Length: 551
Image (cartoon, rainbow, N blue to C red):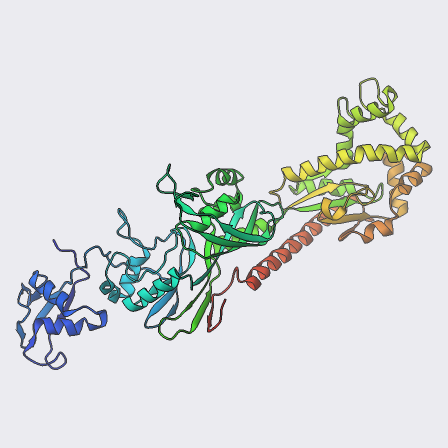
């Protein structure tokens, strides 16, 4: 049975269809003029028995029509051409000669062996039936994008325009720039990749760098952004040749395969998937997007340029990767209530870290602090059970400021290491809290250690009463301990948020919720700022079409 396009049916009306006596083939040729179906194809359809008159098959192209006949015809598809299918094209620009489309990720451009349907060409034939007369299996297709690559695609509507555009592509007069989200952070800010490409001899469906027998291939990349943790980077990539899988192979050869590319970055993709979370779910395809396209219009020579932002899965992944856990340092003078506030944060489900608890573990038998102090000060630094002798240590540092500083220099790096391990273990959390009494006085680069500092304050009288009652400290010891920290006014001036604790411990739960709300507002502001940056750079937002300008 001959495969046909959609069958057409109508009734012949001499008053509107050319008058009585019109030949059957002439009638159908006129009726199908908007589809550019030639008279030869109409005659072939009639002679093949695909036309009927009043329900009976008619094979005579020259049959004269009188009026009122019920007519039907099915036009055979050209050999090798795909069936027409409805579906969105992502049309950005159209004139009589060409189209510019925003191809969706997951859509194959043209049919191939074993894939006759579900491609962009099938959709093009539905919306532009005249493309059938261009011939071949890829009518109108001038260049292609991989199935999972999204973005700008140029389509010719006539054969002369197709030939002219194909010549421009071959002569490298068409400018194409892509966005690629890659694993890791490349060294430098950009560069050229000139590596010849050919078929991988071990895997024929793949391409590979082929120094012998490969075809010239050149790409230029520019680093525009990297995730705070260095897990991924965003590159603008301009290509000067159009080899199959060129960008994917070149970036993989550079050591930074595209995120989501299971062919040329299988191992990094597997590791990425294991990290879980929304970042892994969004990277379900290669994060490559045809972003900019500029060419001379074949009809009049004017330059047309287009910029098309990537689809939401792409820019949302960039937003997520740009987000980092809020690392909150918690400070305050002794007895102000910062430990109580830390417990209030923990009660909300937020991960928490206590420097005092870390020091206690370091000073325990077998702990790193006990080992280090014993190595420096001998067995006198240890109690009978092998832990640090805290009474000896307190007396020693109270007696000698030099001794105190030396102990701090030994112990503080250990505490910071424990804190950084805590942050790394909770990198998926939205906010984490680290109570470090001497965070500001430690000499650490605070902006590197934490993202913001929350300070707790209360009156001096309330603090002293709590320390005397809770810890048994006398006034002299309190003064000495306060003297090892910055004055409260100076300390709180470095804090992004200050919590007043004069009302006592019971009120701190409500204060903790207020701080969490402030932190959420800050995260939202940062997310909006990142999105605004994406829009300003053209990585999100609306497509831009410029007539007569280079991109």
